[in-house]
Image 1: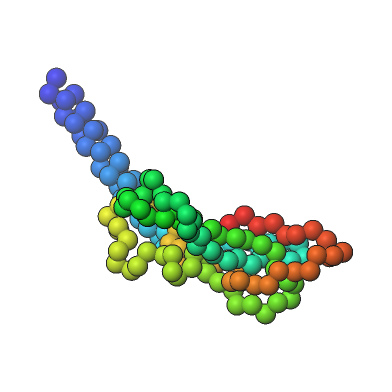
Image 2 (image 1 turned 90 degrees about the horizontal axis):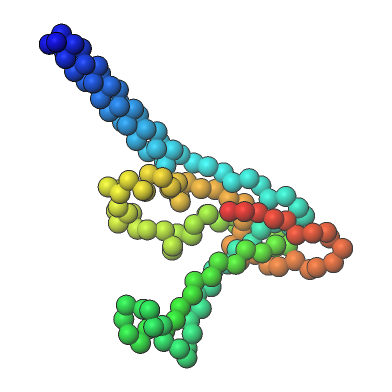
Length: 146
């Protein structure tokens, strides 16, 4: 009976060690994936993609769900639109610097941060506040999911 118990304990220890190694390998893979760069697909169509960010505040109504009473209702809006073709606008980061968490303030101990890509490592094909195109016989707008 003791021989069978020893074998079972050895098998359990081996399975536990393999499980720990698999967990370490998974966390290492997630960290490498989190830090790697990715380039989004180039949009198709005859227009390039422009983006602007607007911060709209309601001057009349207070936000009843705000943590501080009397705070005005606010809405941050990202607008993606087709921009003029052949424009020499500077390509922008996927997540603007103003909206990224400050270095050192991100919670690195939180496991869920490993499940998302570092925003500074995502490259897109859009320009910041590019001009809108003239609508005519140029065809359909390009579509891009980002």
